Image 1 (cartoon, rainbow, N blue to C red):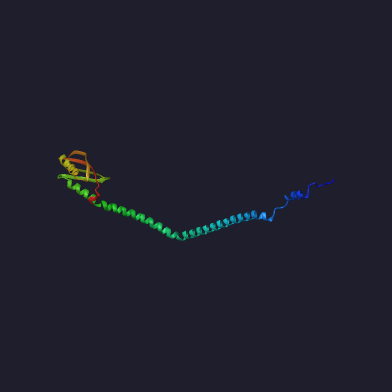
Image 2: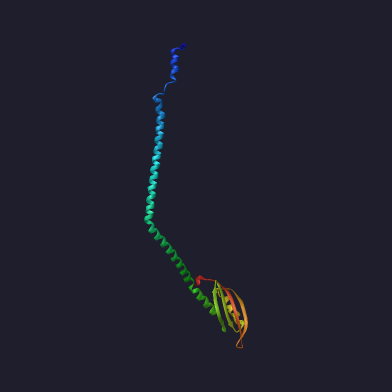
Length: 189
């Protein structure tokens, strides 16, 4: 079989041109972009590695410094704890100092309110409540004591809890128990 090319030579040349390899100039731009992209990615990876190494070395330096300062830190913590204990003790002392004369003044006021022919058997102040127990010859004396206590600014809500008449050695005696709320007055100290 014989083949014949019936196409003119000009058309034949155009047909063969589409099958040739690309030119080197056409490949420069894509290859350059690829190398540029690889260079940027490599540069970023190297920069990140350098940052990681710098942070690791800084962390190691800080940990070393913390180990070196550990005894001083422990000493500072111990001193802070001792200072807190000392402040607590000083607070207790200040509180006692502020109220040291209050109980003396309170007992002095109770003693000054006591009328003649009255004997105290017990005087107590617990949680702001004054309790007085005693004996006297008459209920009028007990009433007089209660009136005198109510007239003082440090006492309020004076109440008679118990009043019992008893005979001791042929004498009539009234045993009593009085309670009153105590108003704390820090400015009186």
